Each structure stands twice: as C-alpha cells, then as structure tokens.
Figure 1 (cartoon, protein in one colour):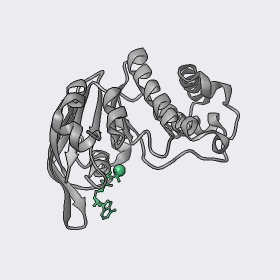
Figure 2 (cartoon, helix red, strand yellow):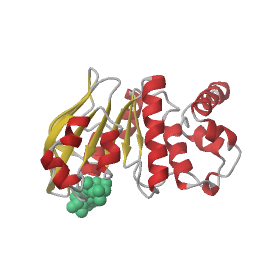
Figure 3 (cartoon, protein in one colour):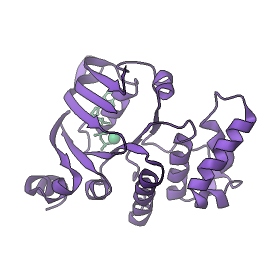
Length: 235
Ligand SMILES: Nc1ncnc2c1ncn2[C@@H]1O[C@H](COP(=O)(O)OP(=O)(O)OP(=O)(O)O)[C@@H](O)[C@H]1O
Ligand SMILES: [Mg+2]
C-alpha cells in the first residue's frame, strides 16, 4: 500500500534521512521505533510533503506521491495524526470531527460520517457536545484519531500516538488502534518512541537510527531480538 524507497530528505541543505526504506501492506499496523532525533518525525513529514524529498520516492497504491502537497496526499487517501496536540479546545467534539471534512459542503454527508465515527468511539459519542479542551489527554488523542477517519482514508499515519500520555492512556490508545485495525481493517503506520508498546500492538516494525532503518521484521520477533532489546527496549 505504501512504499518508501531510498528516501533522502532534511532541512535546509542538510540531510536527516539518508536512505530510508519502509513498506506498509494493506491491513497492517506498522510501527517505526527509534531514539529521539533519529528522524522519525522527519520520515512522517517527508511522506506527507512537509519536507522536501531530495532522492528516492514514495509510492501509495499505484500512485507516486513523492513531494506532492499535503492536500493532494490527503485526497489520495492518507490521513495523519500529528505528534503535537491538534484538537481545537474551544470547540465541541462534534465540531472537531466536522473539521476533518472541512472541504465537504454537503451537511448531510458530514453529519452521517460524524455519526459513523462516533459509533466507532462510544467514549467520544458520550461527549460529543463537550468542549474538546476539557477532555483528558487520551480522549483528545482519540478524537484526533477519529477526526483522521472522517475522509475515509486508506492509511492513517500517526506520529507518536502515546506522546504526553500516561501509561494507562497509552495502553488505551493502542488498544483502540488494534480494535480499529480488526473492526474496519484500518491500515496504520505509527511512529513511536514507546518502543515496547508500539511493537506489541503492531504486525511489523522498523528501527530508525540516525536517519536510516537498521532493523526490520515481524513485531513479535523484534521484541525478542537481543540487540533490539538491549538498545531500544531497556534490556
Ligand atoms: N525544522 C527543522 N529544522 C532543522 N532541523 C530540524 C527540524 N526539525 C527537526 N530537525 C532535526 O532533525 C533531526 C531529526 O528530528 P525528528 O523530529 O525527525 O526526530 P524524531 O526521531 O521524531 O525525534 P523525537 O523522538 O524526539 O520526536 C533532529 O536532529 C532535529 O534537530
Ligand atoms: Mg518525533
């Protein structure tokens, strides 16, 4: 579904990514782990057209999406949940979901889709008229994931879904990602500093270090790998 081939990208004239290769198959949850500053968010930004790719390419389905604009990539069927909090705190849960479809004019279509997303997240449905900013961090993250589903994406990319969340909220978020994967076949590419939690919830994983992927494999095997354990999972 998504193929990242030998991608070089960075900021100003300096390469942060130096030949990244990743693959996401339909129906998979794939997790990219790696230390702070390894370039995980830069991979994300490069795929999404926020950082220029200088060499290599990104293929989504049949389409070459290398260096397309974020809007075009969204239209191709890739949605994102960014690393920083992105809900609009003064707006209700419902209004936040509506923003996930801001180009759609047909109110009926929008409301139908909101109801569909709320069905997937009963916790959000209970709070649909609550101000988003008054919800817990985990609930806000869930809302961001819900909003990313508004345009019926084929793939959702999540940059550190656990960022800033307590261990129990982190667990809840990953349980929801696995549930969406099972219930609606959602394909997910997650970038995660919380390596153990990320891999435990994924089918396959990649390790990114200094702008290159160094290990890859079935997530459960990476979790058992001596070197991966020593370097990234705390022994
Ligand atoms: N806008 C920018 N301009 C210049 N350098 C940047 C910019 N954004 C990131 N970098 C640098 O690129 C490198 C990789 O950053 P990136 O955010 O991709 O890392 P990361 O793996 O996502 O880290 P973290 O786990 O902390 O989120 C870092 O050295 C960072 O300082
Ligand atoms: Mg990051």
